[in-house]
Structure formats: structure tokens, C-alpha cells
Length: 69
Image (cartoon, rainbow, N blue to C red; front, top):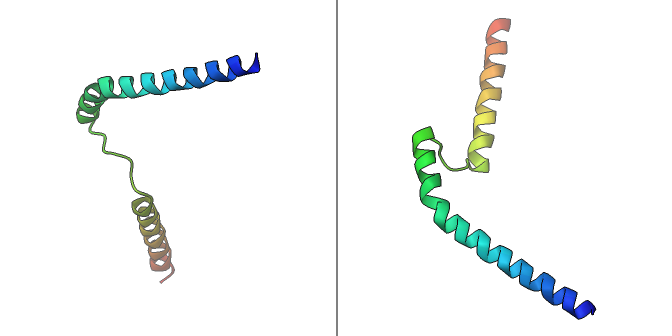
């Protein structure tokens, strides 16, 4: 009986994977139009976020040093 459950679980997993792939493919044009209208770029890379943080910290330290002078 356990074999039936493991088989069913396997086939449900495959069905979910196929549904996800199908929905992703069908909804991609809708997502692209929404991103264009909302002017959303792709996810930022980790290095660019780190660079932005470093720039903010350096600007903040530079501002503090300028106030001390």
C-alpha cells in the first residue's frame, strides 16, 4: 500500500511541475507588460547593492568629517 502513496506523490509532483511551467510560459507576456508599465527592472545583483551601500556609508562618513572640520 505504501508503494501506491509514493507513486501518487511522485505523479502529483510531476503534475505540479508541469502546471508551474505552463503558467509561467502563459503569463510571461502579462508579467513583461506589467514590468514595462511599472518600470521595474530585474532583480539587482548583489554586487550593485553592496556598492550602493558602500557609497552611502562613504558619503555619510565624508559628511561627518566635513562637519568636524
